[in-house]
Amino acid sequence: MTAAHAQRSPAPENAEVYIVWPQNGTVISGGKFWLRMGLRNMGVAPKGVERQNTGHHHVLIDTDLPPMDKEIPSDRNHLHFGAGETEARIELPPGKHTLQLLLGDHNHVPHDPPVMSKKITVTVK
Image 1 (cartoon, rainbow, N blue to C red):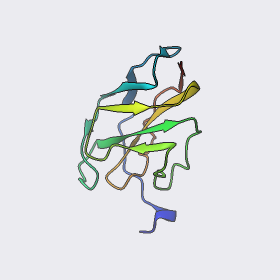
Image 2: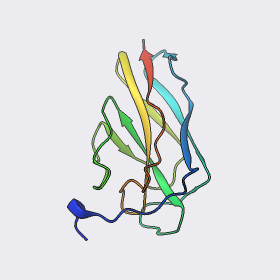
Image 3: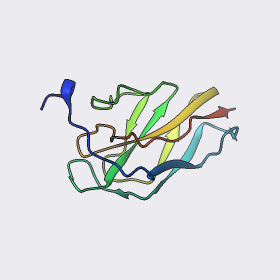
């Protein structure tokens, strides 16, 4: 299977990923903060571990959702947490930023249906 035609893993209809902290509208001093990620009705597993109803977190920073049938990119706007992390130390420059979570399967491909959070905005001072 090539990355251009990746097979998507199924996700339960009631699966939900969400940002625990920061909340929408939070003002962050200094730019460094702990991002806390939540998941309901699915489990977290490291990349490469293929188990039904599991995935790992990807944080989208200042970008829109990627194509749902391809691997989630890995760059400064798409952070991968392939070890199964549920919190991460993030540093952003001053200004307004958007954050959104997208769960990826063992191959970093979004599930079917995709499990994604609402996009939030934070301001770094």
